[in-house]
Image 1: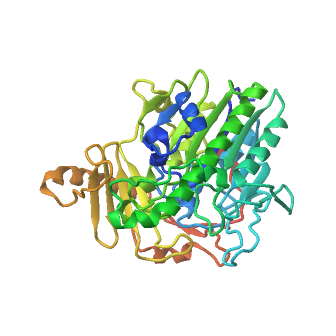
Image 2: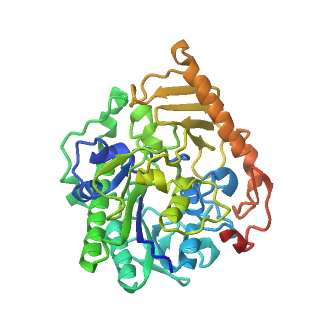
Image 3: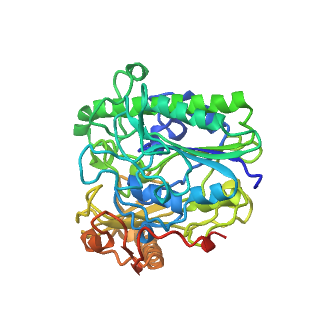
Length: 466
């Protein structure tokens, strides 16, 4: 069995980096996350390259881009022949578990409010212990699926319940065993129901401010949404504190890699976007928090800035744990860059993208592709508009430089990088409704950018695992 660390991977939902004190938020205190940040290496260029739930989660768990997996919108059945991160760790001796939101299955779609069971087997991509659900936003008294064909109602609030499930799993892992545990609360995501317990609202200022890139006429109307958002972030902070406390009580903190991140951000009025809008090439949608603590390896509140995409997480975790990388993976092993080693490989630019104007079905009108470098963000919308921002001089992206003479050389370079990255993915950048033949009537992926695929329920070619 590999001697790599335990992994506790906390994946929040819709938490933009700028909403946390570590990245500049001044209206809330998150003592547990701030403590974790002070004991961690912080990555300042963790980019949700496709800022929608399912596309991100597919990249995280397979190390492959949406153009390959077919996850270009939500509620898509993941192909059974995908080799997942859970497969690799389970086959190398780790006890694997997923707790919380999954969103890599069709769930009950297109039925509204139906069951959201994720079947055992290949639909769970190698995660053996399971207290997950595909998608729901009932934060008080919601449900998780168990290992069999049942669901279980939790008591109280979601973040408290998921912490209990996670601790229950970790307590069952022997001292001579390793665990790879993903805890994925749905917070801080929109819900039509109740957002958070009242005590978290009491920790907020009476009047909230929004950044200067929020149109003034929107500020008053966003007050309640921002209160809901920040209150949910405070619930996440308490959950993180509970999990860290258990690691310390159990004596496992020293040999556990703890990661806190999110699948995408939210506009919350910035650039004129509505409170819960994502899917944009702007920093509020694509730049997410990343802090990682592993005593002796990642510690000390150090900040590093290698460009990292969701597809890079899987191979980098393998690199940190000295595990062989499946040949299916398209992302890069950035372990040396995360460690800050001299001469480490880094990417010059990341491909960013959105396919559909809808979260859950194919709808033309909001298609864009872009590149994100350490200094600039460039996006080309299929509707014809370009956006170019100097992130150092204009972090709130209020001055679009696209088409200006002063930025002509920079734009030309970014356009060249965009074309090269699209070519790697065989992406001809077409209207999203032209991808309708990628899916059968059960929302299973039968085609991708490279052509037709085999039976979506075929087993993986396990020879690609080594």
